[in-house]
Image (cartoon, rainbow, N blue to C red; front, side):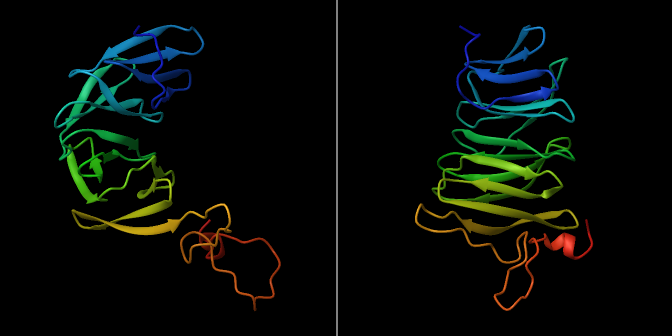
Length: 215
Protein backbone atom coordinates (compact mmCIF):
# COMPACT_ATOMS: atom_id res chain seq x y z
CA UNK A 1 0.00 0.00 0.00
CA UNK A 2 2.97 2.30 0.45
CA UNK A 3 3.19 2.67 -3.35
CA UNK A 4 -0.06 4.66 -3.57
CA UNK A 5 -0.39 8.36 -4.34
CA UNK A 6 -2.41 10.37 -1.84
CA UNK A 7 -3.12 13.40 -4.10
CA UNK A 8 -1.13 15.72 -1.84
CA UNK A 9 1.84 17.96 -2.61
CA UNK A 10 4.61 16.57 -4.74
CA UNK A 11 7.63 17.97 -6.52
CA UNK A 12 10.91 17.23 -8.26
CA UNK A 13 13.92 17.11 -5.97
CA UNK A 14 16.28 16.79 -8.93
CA UNK A 15 15.88 16.59 -12.70
CA UNK A 16 14.63 13.00 -12.70
CA UNK A 17 13.30 12.25 -9.21
CA UNK A 18 9.83 13.19 -7.99
CA UNK A 19 8.82 12.89 -4.34
CA UNK A 20 5.40 12.75 -2.71
CA UNK A 21 3.88 11.75 0.65
CA UNK A 22 2.01 8.51 1.14
CA UNK A 23 0.75 7.71 4.63
CA UNK A 24 3.72 7.48 6.99
CA UNK A 25 6.23 7.56 4.12
CA UNK A 26 7.69 9.86 1.50
CA UNK A 27 8.31 8.12 -1.81
CA UNK A 28 11.05 9.09 -4.26
CA UNK A 29 10.37 7.91 -7.81
CA UNK A 30 13.07 7.99 -10.48
CA UNK A 31 11.07 8.76 -13.61
CA UNK A 32 13.72 7.20 -15.87
CA UNK A 33 14.48 3.95 -14.08
CA UNK A 34 11.06 3.69 -12.35
CA UNK A 35 12.91 2.78 -9.15
CA UNK A 36 11.27 3.91 -5.90
CA UNK A 37 12.80 4.45 -2.48
CA UNK A 38 10.92 5.34 0.71
CA UNK A 39 11.66 7.55 3.70
CA UNK A 40 9.61 6.95 6.83
CA UNK A 41 8.33 9.92 8.82
CA UNK A 42 9.90 9.90 12.31
CA UNK A 43 6.54 10.50 14.01
CA UNK A 44 3.50 9.09 12.25
CA UNK A 45 1.77 10.43 9.16
CA UNK A 46 3.34 12.95 6.78
CA UNK A 47 1.65 16.35 6.62
CA UNK A 48 2.83 19.17 4.34
CA UNK A 49 5.78 18.65 2.00
CA UNK A 50 8.03 20.69 -0.27
CA UNK A 51 11.29 20.06 -2.16
CA UNK A 52 14.13 22.33 -3.26
CA UNK A 53 15.55 21.45 -6.67
CA UNK A 54 18.62 23.72 -6.34
CA UNK A 55 19.99 22.34 -3.07
CA UNK A 56 18.31 18.91 -3.22
CA UNK A 57 16.74 19.18 0.22
CA UNK A 58 13.29 18.16 1.36
CA UNK A 59 11.04 19.61 4.07
CA UNK A 60 7.99 17.90 5.53
CA UNK A 61 5.90 18.03 8.69
CA UNK A 62 4.35 15.30 10.77
CA UNK A 63 0.68 15.16 11.72
CA UNK A 64 0.45 15.15 15.50
CA UNK A 65 0.02 17.58 18.36
CA UNK A 66 2.71 20.28 18.20
CA UNK A 67 3.98 19.13 14.78
CA UNK A 68 7.63 19.36 13.77
CA UNK A 69 9.12 20.29 10.38
CA UNK A 70 11.95 18.00 9.28
CA UNK A 71 14.65 18.93 6.76
CA UNK A 72 16.35 16.05 4.91
CA UNK A 73 19.00 15.97 2.22
CA UNK A 74 18.73 13.89 -0.94
CA UNK A 75 19.87 11.33 -2.10
CA UNK A 76 21.51 10.17 1.14
CA UNK A 77 18.27 10.92 3.07
CA UNK A 78 20.03 12.19 6.18
CA UNK A 79 18.27 14.57 8.56
CA UNK A 80 19.75 18.07 8.60
CA UNK A 81 17.57 19.74 11.23
CA UNK A 82 14.17 19.95 12.92
CA UNK A 83 12.10 23.14 13.13
CA UNK A 84 9.80 23.51 16.12
CA UNK A 85 7.34 26.39 15.82
CA UNK A 86 4.10 27.36 17.55
CA UNK A 87 1.72 25.22 15.46
CA UNK A 88 -0.58 23.15 17.64
CA UNK A 89 -2.27 20.80 15.16
CA UNK A 90 -0.90 20.84 11.62
CA UNK A 91 1.04 22.62 8.89
CA UNK A 92 -0.91 23.02 5.67
CA UNK A 93 1.77 24.55 3.40
CA UNK A 94 5.56 24.63 3.13
CA UNK A 95 7.78 26.39 0.57
CA UNK A 96 11.54 26.78 0.06
CA UNK A 97 13.07 29.97 -1.28
CA UNK A 98 14.82 29.66 -4.63
CA UNK A 99 17.97 31.22 -3.19
CA UNK A 100 19.24 31.23 0.37
CA UNK A 101 18.45 28.97 3.33
CA UNK A 102 14.84 30.06 3.83
CA UNK A 103 11.66 28.10 4.38
CA UNK A 104 8.11 29.43 4.68
CA UNK A 105 5.38 27.57 6.54
CA UNK A 106 1.66 28.10 7.02
CA UNK A 107 -0.15 26.42 9.88
CA UNK A 108 -3.80 25.44 9.98
CA UNK A 109 -6.39 26.00 12.70
CA UNK A 110 -6.16 27.54 15.28
CA UNK A 111 -3.15 29.79 14.51
CA UNK A 112 -3.33 30.24 10.71
CA UNK A 113 0.21 31.57 11.03
CA UNK A 114 2.63 32.44 8.22
CA UNK A 115 6.25 31.92 9.29
CA UNK A 116 9.65 32.28 7.64
CA UNK A 117 12.67 30.35 8.89
CA UNK A 118 16.39 30.30 8.29
CA UNK A 119 16.45 26.52 8.33
CA UNK A 120 20.23 26.20 8.25
CA UNK A 121 20.52 28.22 11.46
CA UNK A 122 17.25 26.85 12.89
CA UNK A 123 15.97 30.39 13.48
CA UNK A 124 12.39 31.64 13.17
CA UNK A 125 12.78 35.02 11.45
CA UNK A 126 9.21 36.31 11.56
CA UNK A 127 5.64 35.12 12.04
CA UNK A 128 2.22 36.63 11.28
CA UNK A 129 -1.20 35.22 12.16
CA UNK A 130 -4.09 35.32 9.66
CA UNK A 131 -7.13 34.34 11.77
CA UNK A 132 -9.55 32.12 9.89
CA UNK A 133 -7.67 32.33 6.56
CA UNK A 134 -7.37 28.96 4.81
CA UNK A 135 -4.57 29.31 2.26
CA UNK A 136 -4.27 27.13 -0.84
CA UNK A 137 -0.83 28.10 -2.16
CA UNK A 138 2.43 29.52 -0.80
CA UNK A 139 5.53 30.46 -2.79
CA UNK A 140 8.60 32.71 -2.78
CA UNK A 141 9.45 35.20 -5.48
CA UNK A 142 12.13 33.34 -7.52
CA UNK A 143 14.17 36.55 -7.81
CA UNK A 144 13.74 37.84 -4.25
CA UNK A 145 13.43 35.68 -1.13
CA UNK A 146 12.04 38.68 0.76
CA UNK A 147 8.74 38.44 -1.15
CA UNK A 148 6.14 35.75 -0.52
CA UNK A 149 2.84 35.05 -2.24
CA UNK A 150 -0.01 33.56 -0.20
CA UNK A 151 -3.19 32.58 -2.05
CA UNK A 152 -6.68 31.71 -0.87
CA UNK A 153 -10.01 31.43 -2.70
CA UNK A 154 -10.71 35.17 -2.61
CA UNK A 155 -7.40 36.99 -2.67
CA UNK A 156 -3.68 36.98 -3.31
CA UNK A 157 -1.45 38.50 -0.63
CA UNK A 158 2.11 39.55 -1.38
CA UNK A 159 4.16 39.64 1.81
CA UNK A 160 7.32 41.72 1.96
CA UNK A 161 9.90 40.69 4.55
CA UNK A 162 11.43 43.90 5.85
CA UNK A 163 14.74 43.65 7.64
CA UNK A 164 16.46 45.85 10.20
CA UNK A 165 19.76 44.29 11.23
CA UNK A 166 18.71 40.95 12.77
CA UNK A 167 15.01 41.83 13.03
CA UNK A 168 12.54 40.73 10.34
CA UNK A 169 8.94 41.90 9.94
CA UNK A 170 6.11 41.20 7.50
CA UNK A 171 4.39 43.89 5.44
CA UNK A 172 1.46 42.86 3.27
CA UNK A 173 -0.09 43.99 -0.01
CA UNK A 174 -3.54 42.53 -0.62
CA UNK A 175 -4.79 41.87 -4.16
CA UNK A 176 -8.47 40.93 -4.34
CA UNK A 177 -9.42 38.43 -7.01
CA UNK A 178 -12.29 39.40 -9.37
CA UNK A 179 -15.49 37.40 -9.53
CA UNK A 180 -17.00 36.22 -12.80
CA UNK A 181 -18.65 39.60 -13.48
CA UNK A 182 -15.70 41.89 -12.89
CA UNK A 183 -12.47 42.72 -14.66
CA UNK A 184 -9.15 42.73 -12.87
CA UNK A 185 -7.69 46.17 -12.25
CA UNK A 186 -3.94 46.56 -11.74
CA UNK A 187 -2.63 47.01 -8.22
CA UNK A 188 -0.97 50.39 -7.85
CA UNK A 189 2.76 50.28 -7.51
CA UNK A 190 3.06 46.53 -7.03
CA UNK A 191 4.69 45.24 -10.21
CA UNK A 192 3.37 47.38 -13.08
CA UNK A 193 2.84 51.15 -13.28
CA UNK A 194 -0.70 52.52 -13.30
CA UNK A 195 -1.98 53.60 -16.71
CA UNK A 196 -3.62 57.00 -16.99
CA UNK A 197 -6.14 57.98 -19.64
CA UNK A 198 -4.23 61.17 -20.42
CA UNK A 199 -1.06 59.23 -21.28
CA UNK A 200 -0.60 59.28 -25.06
CA UNK A 201 1.37 56.05 -25.15
CA UNK A 202 0.15 52.97 -26.96
CA UNK A 203 3.10 50.65 -26.46
CA UNK A 204 3.34 47.67 -24.09
CA UNK A 205 3.03 48.03 -20.31
CA UNK A 206 6.51 47.63 -18.86
CA UNK A 207 7.42 46.64 -15.29
CA UNK A 208 8.54 49.47 -13.04
CA UNK A 209 11.99 47.87 -12.81
CA UNK A 210 12.35 47.92 -16.61
CA UNK A 211 11.34 51.58 -16.86
CA UNK A 212 13.88 52.41 -14.15
CA UNK A 213 16.59 50.60 -16.09
CA UNK A 214 17.03 47.91 -13.45
CA UNK A 215 16.50 44.98 -15.82
